[in-house]
Image 1 (cartoon, protein in one colour):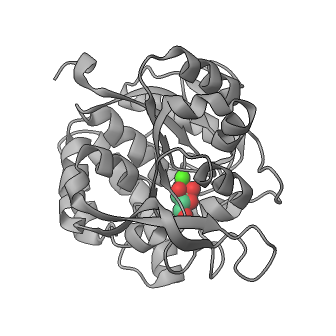
Image 2 (tube, protein in one colour):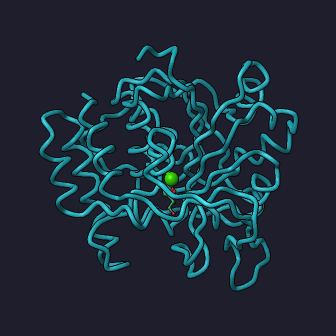
Length: 305
Ligand code: RIB
Ligand code: CA
């Protein structure tokens, strides 16, 4: 399938091991074309998430430009998930340092200008805190008409991970999440309730490690780093591949069951601060065919170098 028949996607992320997977399978898919990447603070600080995005794109052979975004949330305190992703956010010796720099340090204005320029509305995949997107929607509400959908990893219909009630991306900036959810832009949410159904168990990691290319074993090694935390913290038989769920849905939506609900984020400082509370306004993923997900992910990783 030629590039011209693929759907352009804008990627807002905080790489991050699972963000790296999401970028890689989006690039490997003939259905999608990563048009540009914007980075945000999140798993680690902005300098590291931006450097990691450059590393991953170089490594997978994508020429997508990278625009660094915001350093902090709109209102809340600084957070990071270095405990999960390591000090640099991408402990992956198999992914070298980048050979180029970010195209700009102004992701918000890049997105505003780009969306005002394109003729067709764009899909935005968001796999980190939503601060960049909230800033775009506040500075230029007109561009909401040029966003076809925001497909994001965040929230949960049941328990959290950054607190008993809140998931990390939502907890990092609940105000930004609420701005996005209230913007009128179509949103598709992949929360912990569904991403905790796609665990990279030892047989699934072995299938990646056995691939004949370079990418498979490198991803298997990264998952090994992630696995210990998920075993010790949750007793899971493998790490959850949160962010790739967004891309897998764009490629093979039938793998998922979604339901139209309303999602609001608790921005009070109460016990459920950052919790995504339900009533009807967002397509929320509830179930996933986990074996089908890993078959797709492994096939796409096998198509990388
Ligand atoms: O809660 C999981 C989310 O937080 C994922 O996007 C992970 O990369 C971290 O950003
Ligand atoms: Ca992420």
